[in-house]
Image (tube, rainbow, N blue to C red; front, top):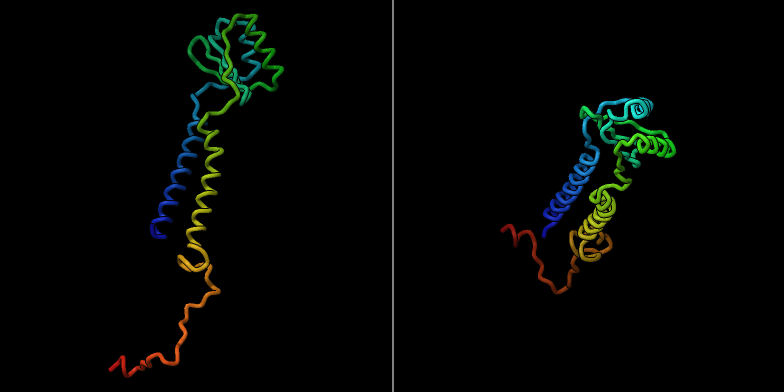
Amino acid sequence: MSGNQTRRLLSLVALGMLTAALITVALGRRSHTAARVTYSDLIARAQQRPSSIFAVVFKPGSRSIDATLSNGTVVTVHYPSDQSQAQFQELLQRKHVQFDSQGTGTSAWRSVLGYVLPLALLVAVWIFLMRRMGAGAGGGNRLMSFGKSRAKRMAPDSPKIGFKDVAG
């Protein structure tokens, strides 16, 4: 494989990894459109009209709550502390409102890319540098061969070729 082909292949691999990382980040941040209300409004609604709340999903990773109302609207609120989340959960239990938790983990792809992408980039740079240096100090494109002269020694018995011999 020539140097240009290797560079082209490495750049395509790097571009593919960058594209995969951007898609993973974009898909991870994608969310549904939600109406914004305050945390106190949601607590008041749960205390006064618990039947107007269909289901509640806690998201401890972002300290947010997605509440689905009986009319199908989804509202998103953020709670200030873990203690306030526990108190709200107790209120929902007393009022017999369904709730669930989404967990704190991230997606498997994001986790794998977080470990593999930096390692793959380091390996790609290492391979690029090794191919660039060639096979040792004297091979390849002679990047590190500044100490070796390519001049040929003239032997005293070598034939003497002058300009007249070549030019006619």
